[in-house]
View: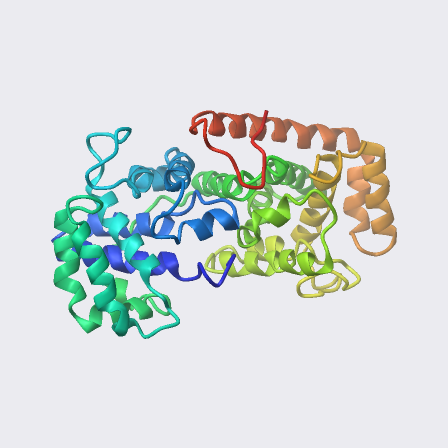
Length: 409
């Protein structure tokens, strides 16, 4: 989503990892975890620069995004089993002084698969490059790469089908048809936990947004209760608050953290995030209401919002609640270009937007009638998120630093 240069990289690495693992007679269940690891391997690359650097064969600071990915994944049950694989996916086979004695075998497979893909120039015919890539990779057996994994690569990469299926891996899931699915308990409680995990990925890219989704989630749930939503609907609203900005994973951190007003061109790079939110969440077929709430949170009742320009009748009540919660939270929190507003000024702005026909008057009235409680609900949730944010970075290497976003003090 962030750049055409990066697009398809993770699907291709998943295919390469799967093919190498299968050639090494890896059990089916382990193949599933290997594909999952490959799909998530650069999850710790926060900025566009981080992600572009990950595509350099002799990558600089490659351990940092791997360590970041490990800390994102290790505490979430569904992904904890692959966190160590991702943590060590850039360590050479012959190790480095700071590497553990036992690096997961899957890390060595993922390492080679990742480096194969970054060597490929996808503007050229792939078969014409195969010999060049083999000539660069094969001599690194026993140093950078595992001899066993190199042997699997040697046995597979002599086939034209190995390279041709690599291209199809970004277009369909045919190469992965025989992989056992990884089943998870998707109870409502676990969906809440998953939504918090995703909010952390969205928000932790910058100290100024580190608590935004948590604040929106808490205020939206509180407003939903006042409006008369059921307990289940209120929980879904909490989840929607965590997920509403998931499309911002497709927006470069450099723009989110810009210490000034965005230009029109820059804002046009941010605008698609609501559309991307819908694209990301659309597989949740059994939660269509939640998908609409999240993807319509920038719609305005007079049709002037984005990206669909819906009117008041077309915007569901949940999206109207989320829009008010989002604006309120954004106004009272610090941003790179300004300090958070006082509560009276924030309410004044929201009321003006309501009178102009942009926001739902009933929801704005409920917020205004108990603005101090709304502020308490928001800040209380954000304080908890801030503590999680600080704890997260405490375990990262001292040398870690964002290219464009400061760490918390």
